[in-house]
Image 1 (tube, rainbow, N blue to C red):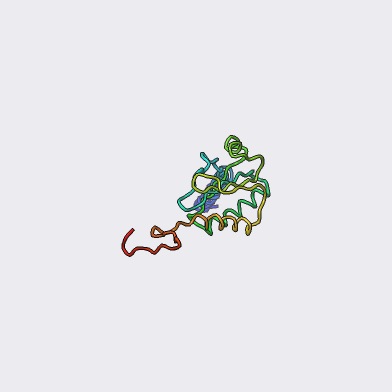
Image 2 (cartoon, rainbow, N blue to C red):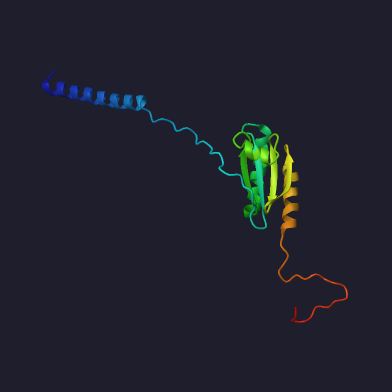
Length: 163
């Protein structure tokens, strides 16, 4: 074996060694897989609704099939109504004082708030059509009457240009 052949063989061996070292380093020092983001508990449960809208508080228990199904229904309703409906989820175990104050005994429990008052509440799983019908009913009742509206009194005629 000549001197040049021996140098070429050493060069190939060193190159192979570097490739194996890089592969081993990648295999041994793998990038840690990030844990799924933890859902932060809500700091405050919504107690007021938007103007001419509805706030919905959903007391749920994560992992409970009825709570998860109701959460999907409420998400679809929020997408449909946009800014008129605000949905707040409160974990039943993380917010026991809020649940007790609202009279919630077991999840799933939904409270609908109009302004600062409870408009409606129900416990258990409702169908999407039933929940949507209730939201429609409450929102229809909240629509404002125009500023120029005057009651019609029998026997009185409105004066032109006068109040």
